[in-house]
Length: 181
Image (cartoon, rainbow, N blue to C red; front, top):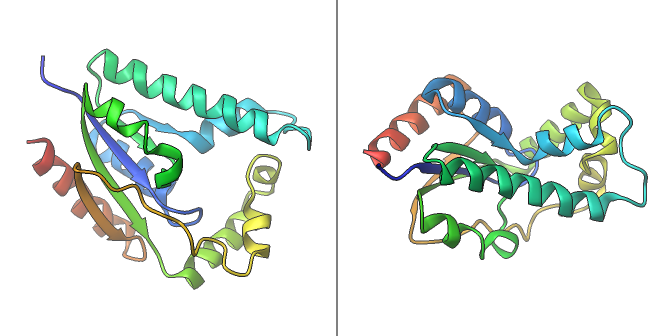
């Protein structure tokens, strides 16, 4: 059996991770596990109580990791969509590398466009606020100046998600296909 591939889509909130991951899943015919979508599913239909976010984040992270672990454990390649900041995920990805080929896709975007996307998302999807901190991110003066992308020996693609989605998906899918070879 060949090793499955875990395609890690990372970047700060509003960088286009989920949009790219969903489009890549469709293009490559792969399952896609989104930490944010799992978190929304945990809160549906009533949202979280204000005192629950830390507990819910921990539970959501565990569910996300379990999904990825189960898929690669059964030889299924998968797209994993989460922020994947270095400090949070640095112990996890090496574990995946023991049983899968890990490819890193880092989503980059100009801060002004990222903040514009967060604002648009907040207006278009007000239900997200009970689960996500978009409003808090917008209130910060330098929201993700300290965001650290996960670095490893895995193949890595740094992309600007300001490009048209069709071009971005074609370019990224071609890179993934070459790497997975």
